[in-house]
Image 1 (spheres, protein in one colour):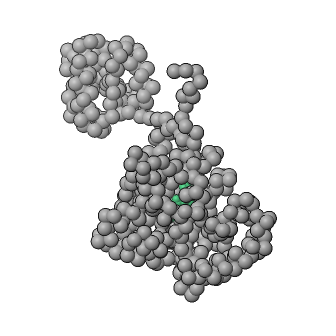
Image 2 (cartoon, rainbow, N blue to C red):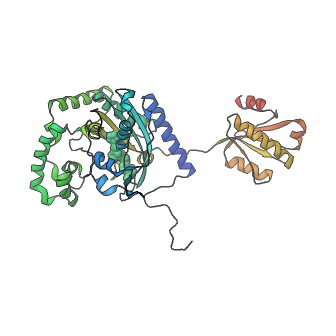
Length: 417
Ligand code: HAM
C-alpha cells in the first residue's frame, strides 16, 4: 500500500471496539425491553431507498434533503439515497405491505443506522445510530404523551439524567397558513439582516427560520404558531399538557420549536441536554397527521420520535463494563488437551460461555489468559485428573479449588451451588 493512502475510517463514521460494543449492546437491550413493555413492534428497514421517498416526505426544501443526503445513481440510472431518517421508510413499509389491515392503531420501533453529510463534530456524525418509535392510527394527544414518556423511561433506565423536554404545537395545515402569512410579513422587514441560510429559507422553507440558532435574537418579537392555533389544535395542545402533567413529566413550552422536517403537524417536541453543546438535541419528534395520505395511503394520523444513540452514549454514566466468560479450561499436557476440547464443547452446549487455549501455550500462560479473560471459573485438567476421571474447578475470585467428576452434570451442579 502506498504511503499516501490514508488507511483510516471515513470522516464522520465511527469504529466500535469490543469494549464500546458492550455499551451499545446495553443501550439496545434497554430500548428493546422498554419497547416491549410499551407494546411497540420492531421494524427493520433497508439502508437505502429511492430518493423520491425522502423528497416527498422529509421535504425537498429541508436541509436534510437539500444538503445532507447521500444520493447516488444505480446502474439502471435510478436515484437512490442512504436513509437520513427512519420515518419515511416506516410509512412506506406500512403502505407497501398493507399493514393497515393488521389494526387501526399500530406501534413500531426501529434501531437503525442513518446517514447525513453534515460537518462532523461532537455528537454529529455522517453515519449515526438512531432509535425511533412511530405510532400510526391515533390522533390523540395521549399517544404523543406516551411517546415522550417512553423515550424518557429509556433514558432513565440507562442512567441519563438532566434531559429537558421542549414541546410546541405548529398547528394543522389550516391554521398554519394564517401563521405563515404573519410570520412572512414579519420576516420581510428583517430579511436583509438574516443569516444567509435564512435568506434562502425565506423562499424555500420559512418555518425552518423559527429555530435558527444564528438569528434567534432577531426573532424575539416574531409571531409564533401557538398564537394562531385553531380551536381543535389548541384543544389538542392543552390535552398534551394535561397528559404530561398527569405523567409527572416536566416540560417547557418552546414557542419557537419548529423542527427541521416538512411533515410535522400539531405537536412537536425535543429532548435537550445541556452537556451536548451545539448539538444539544438527544432526540426529537412530533405528529405527522398528513404524511400517510400524502404518500398515497388512506388518511391516518401518526406521531413518533427518533433518538440519536451516539448522543445518548455521550450522556451515559461512565461505568467500566467488564468482559467476562464463565469458564476457561487450562490443560497441563497434550492428552489432557484432547479431554479439554471435548469438555469445552459440552460446556458451550449447556449454555456456558467457555474457551480454552489453541496456541499450545504453557499452563502458566493459560492461567494468565484465564485472568485476562476475567473467567469466573477455571477448569484444570492434568495427568492426575485424567487418571482419576476428575477435573479441578477453581473459582477465580476466591481462589478456592474443588475436585469434581469429569461429568458435565456434576460440573453444572457445582457451579450452581
Ligand atoms: P431528527 O431530529 O432529524 O428527527 O433526528 C433525530 C435525532 O437523531 C436527533 O435529535 C439527533 O439526536 C440524532 N441525529 C440527527 N442527525 C445526527 C447526526 N448527524 N449525528 C448524530 N446524531 C444525529 C428525525 O429523524 C425524525 N424522523 C424523528 C421522528 C420520528 N419524527 C416523527 N417520527
